[in-house]
Image (cartoon, rainbow, N blue to C red):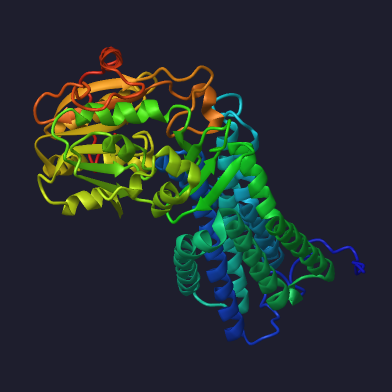
Amino acid sequence: MIEPHAPAPPGSPPPWSAPGGPGGPARLPVRPGTGRFLVLAGVFVCAACGLVYELELVALASYLMGDSVTQASVVLSVMVFAMGIGSLAAKRLRRLAAAGFGAVEATLALVGGCSAMALYAVFAWTGDWGGIWASGPRCLLVAFSLATGLLIGAEIPLLMELIQRIRREDAGGAVADLFAADYVGALVGGLAFPFLLLPFFGQLTGALLTGAVNAVVGGALVLGLFRRDLTRRARWLLLLANAAVLAVLASAAVLVDDFEDAARQAVYGEDVRVALQSGVQEVVLTGGTPGRPLDLFLDGRLRVSGRDELRYHEALVHPAMNGPHARVLILGGGDGLAAREVLRHPGVHRVDVVELDAEVVRLARTDPALSALNQHAFGDPRVRVTTGDAFGWLRSAPPAAYDVVVSDLPDPGITASTKLYSQEFYGLARRVLAPGGRIVVHAGPVASSPRVYWTVEATLRAAGFRTAPYGTGGRHAGFAVGPDRTPADRSHAPRDWGFVLAARTQPRPRLDPDGPRPRVLTDASLAAGARAARGTRIAGLPASTLVHPR
């Protein structure tokens, strides 16, 4: 029941403020020292939740849209800007600090908790990111960053007012205490996100759980500690608002598995066989049944397709095997398909595979469709698999240990792969090559990304190699998805792959005359691919380095 209120005389405090008047001492149910501690504890928890929201937006945007540097820059810059605007706007709420803080926290819990599901839903069901919806996901990302930043920024002035209402003290001391709790909370939130929330709850459930914690703590702080500062009507409204937020978050948490399954089918199709989150990335296998070729997706990007992987892997491996090839190093290639092509050549004594994700290797060994596609390459006694980062592994590898290095790594256009296409990386690879050894690099599509491709070529030359660029194409009609592309990018995916063969002396991309005959690749198609690649040359590009990635 709502209490009646007589009209307030001019200049009197608003009915939402403390009965004792705005700016007056708060009437607490506990001692002032205990109340101050509880406020700072609330600051600590709310700051942790706020940083989790930021990191969640950065991680999900990088996963869905790629280019992690750009996504992190957009999210963090918009959010910090919005925090400043939110702090300014919150000055108008200082007379209503308790009610204002309660409303801000309830709204923040709803917006931050649901942001991951909303972004993922747009990604899954809007389809073509290169078409009409190209700006939609980015606008939604900016909108969530802006809203979250506004609400986080509004917290500090309101909390400062609440602390001062508990016990007046010099502004410097209050600010120091407030920001100390805020920054320590941010530290805990920043550590909890990668080490607790992501591995144990995942992105969607982790965001929902964070929102629930935010709502409970914010609501409890206001309704428990400052309830006497609120009218009965304000208390009921705030209680109902928090209950509604928690109901929404709880309902979403109950339905999150069904939502993920539906979204995954919208992205990958209805025949998803394996979907798991390794410690490195999301791994999805579809198809692999009669009439449906196998597809392997890593973090939403199609890495292997049974429709055309033979064209890719034959062009990657066979030209580099023309020469001594007793000892072969494969960087990446955890699917076992590059190893399959290497093992077809007589005279191969040892194949070392360095793969970052142990789950991909496990699937390559045990999944019936993938192991059949790689012809059980990892069961060959000549193959040794090491789980680890290729860059770090090369730093401790013995010199002149390999005749051939095959770089079957993620696309160079992905920011996370930048160091694997740097001059320093190729310098390490050059050190492990024996005299007369060769390295072949998957350098991305030639036709659609010539600048990226020729930057890789320039970087290899800067590392002391002579290079022979070439490419391959000829995909099946109507199928344009290749490595590092999402199903939503079908109409914009490249229709070719670019490679660079490199050695200390000038190499030539030719097949080994004494080696096995590839099923698709020929010397004529190699020559045509080399001519096509040379026709796109961009001269004068600088090399990519660790401190200046390009």
